[in-house]
Image (cartoon, rainbow, N blue to C red):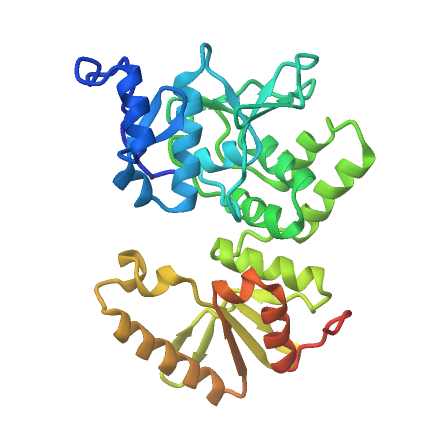
Length: 322
């Protein structure tokens, strides 16, 4: 997500000023030629319409940054979006923090201002913007969001993979202890408990946001915890690392994200149809070893009942059968 390039805004003070006054820009927005992202910040409608929902949110964050009199400090989902920690869904508001005691908790023109915690470290600078550091960002998401929303970011944070544009003068890899230390500053026990719960099930072996989201649903529904990315081989050699392994049930789970069949880094020079055939052959080899294989996609996560039903049909027990 962090590699997304925000398209340049058309503003009354930009190089388009001679051609488009503020009033003309407003009229073009009214006619549908321009999309008003924020007061004084526009994009061509065809550019805006081509953006994915999360890209539109990132553009809104950029507009808040560029329109501010002093650089804001982004927080929560907005900070996660900038630094590349995965979030599920698109927030309605851009979130920033203000010093303790200064008009926190207020929302104005699509921006939610939250009071910073006493003792939190100074903000990071990433992609030209200021934002809460990664442990504090993951902590705040754990406090604010359900497990399905907070676990993907926590899994990613603990993977010891460098976030794009991380400052060279800061600690750049983090552990559960770093998040726990940030959590100790929270004023309420219930808040600290929420962070502890997410940390207790976070796993850096998770291979994608969709896998983390899937696991959060499994945990909330009381399914047995699977092992992640366990290597499998047969007489022909290495088969692969299924996303989920319930060894006691002889069941394997695979989350099929759209990118697996579209993004070049996953296709590795193959066509989507070739990848589908490879996946089928891989699954047949796993079944030959006596395993049941269950697969699901993003649509099965949007309505969690679909994933729950698939797991039950595969023979997996849960504490709360549907």
